Length: 378
Ligand SMILES: [Zn+2]
Ligand SMILES: [Zn+2]
Image (cartoon, rainbow, N blue to C red; front, top):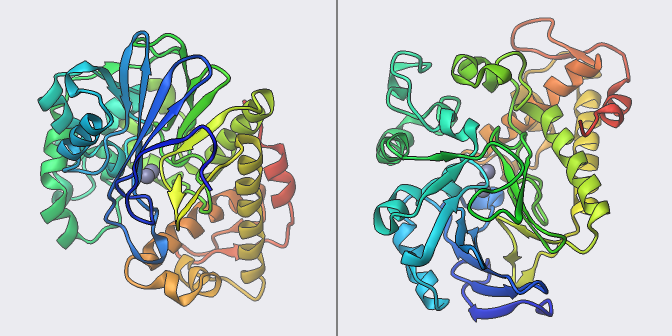
């Protein structure tokens, strides 16, 4: 079933890849969705990246640019939607993950469109010779210093990507208003990524990036990532890991819960799974935020239970909690990342501590649920 206001320009694969849609809003603005291929597969599959174009009186804005190498594909898709790359008046990003900013440098080369980014993105997309955690990450953007992909992969696949994003010319998004189109409001929603943004078009639509996804729960970052990049963050963000970790992510989800209640008619446009398994992933901002918070509450409780018999490493916890097919290949690294984010929150709530460097243990306290309830939207 097609939601009534979505017009299909091109249908693609069952997982959404190659779809082009048109979504006219009551105000007269039009949003186009262009889905570009992702490499990640297996049971952690996100599906393609949904990049969105906003066509309004003030011009044509592209939000997200797909993976590295997708710039030309996006321009082709734009033409197929009856638009032109030369008409782009701005390009911006929901966040600085490679499946969203990978095509950016190529699109800038081909269209000359100005780029607008969050100030945190601007710091993290650069390399800082001498400050990287190890020599293999020299010339790698700071946002990827904590990446857990094997070196055999990153050395062959990511070098060019890092070089190009380091050389970008950018304009900074500093307030709540999006300068190239002042009717678009910005929400800074750190947690999945420190520079995560949502773009709100009146009470009609919300381009949410990876902060809310249908079917799947986005990965929270770890507060531990903050330690490695602290010195390169803007001074206001150097004091505490306020843009990293699960606590930060839950705060952003609570913000979206409030926004969703205030604007119940918002069409939420997610960056993955908008169309997947032959169906549309229509979500409600308030309800989906609540579901994801509940998911993390339950996972935290499950980890506390796993720790009851005695101390465990993050990997041992992951092996107890996740189904074997989710632990294959890179899956185990993803699962450990997820467990570590939760352990940080369980430590904040007083339920968990680290008696040794690599093993977490239960304190016997049960403050976790209450702790989550008390996280404020700020
Ligand atoms: Zn992401
Ligand atoms: Zn993504």
